[in-house]
Length: 162
Ligand SMILES: [Zn+2]
Image (cartoon, rainbow, N blue to C red):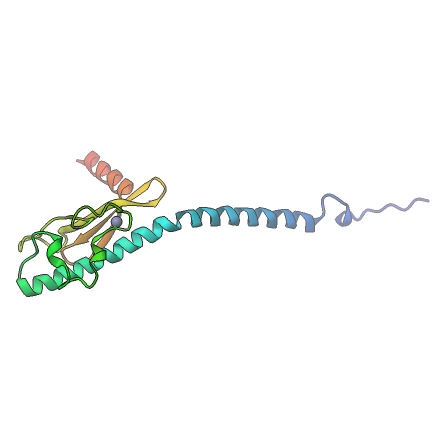
């Protein structure tokens, strides 16, 4: 008489521990791909974070200038030394030309301009590859980061409503 083994849990090829191992390998691979994508975007993130910090310092310097002179400078070069600790903050880390007074497009606020008035902006950055963002310094000293694609789509949607 032959003994039959009906225990399927130890059959080779479909054992549960092996299936668990395959899932674990898949998770590790997915994690590695995510890490590569994340590390690939690191310099991009570092650049706009530096630019954001620069704009905050320019905003603070503009506030100090306004406190003393009761007006805003005609251009950002007037902020040098007295109002800015380090004039390096006048340049975006992605602007390597350094040909002009500052990397930032400056719009001189009027006394009547609202707190939301855009004083300076930088268009050199991407959040991720192909996702451009704009950094804006407002008269209030607040810096905002806007996703250009999202903003454009929002404006198009608002136009359709009209
Ligand atoms: Zn910038």
